[in-house]
Image (tube, rainbow, N blue to C red; front, side):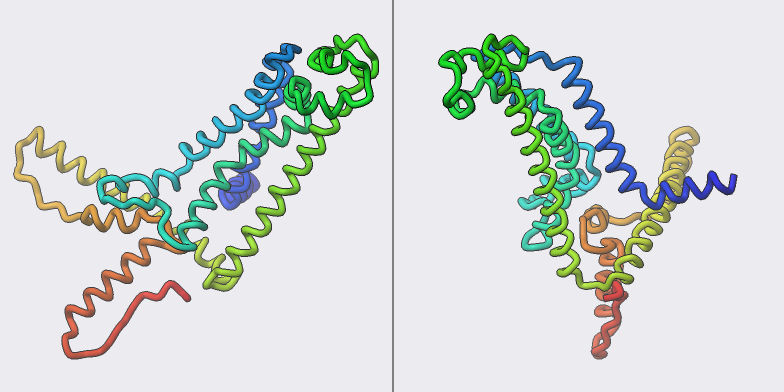
Length: 299
């Protein structure tokens, strides 16, 4: 049991990394199934290009949109924005840009994995490129006069001329090179983004680790307290409905307060909310004193 508990604690500690790894594995497995079972290149000059691009890009687009839908941060930003009349969801300035970039980066993990694995496999690209007039003009230079007509048959191994059929190796090489270039570009972009965000951070490395631990504990306690309060309120309402007893007054936070702590921020919005309430309370209670006390977020 002790070893099992250690494994559980490790999974909880690195649940974000494990989640991204699981999404990547599922995407790779789905792409392999599509390319071997579902995908069948028509080997037609009319359909090759569109058919190959659909299998290469449409699932990636669907995964990208699904990544937004399944992201809790997306709904945390959007919920209630229409009612409040706010036009910008992520906020203004550099902070808003970083927040939107973070959400988009998380949503783009699965589609980029799909495209990269598909390019490394080569099937979709081979089919699409063999139906492209631009690719045919470049590949068929100096080859058989019937090369452009036979090129769409290359993915199906039906090209009559042997030199034309050998172009399949060129198409696969191009596809794999593009796949590795995409992987390298994504890695470089991620490194640059991490460097920029860490350099612009107002806290140190150890302080950032402290805030991550704090946020985890805050979410656990908030969930437990919300469950307790919701259960108590539900019990009172049910009791009132059946027994017709006089309902007791129920004090809870206003909709504005809930909206405040639901916003995304560089650290805890709950702490930010407490700071503002504490400052407002002190300003009301001290008329002549120039004292300002605030719960500092360890800056």
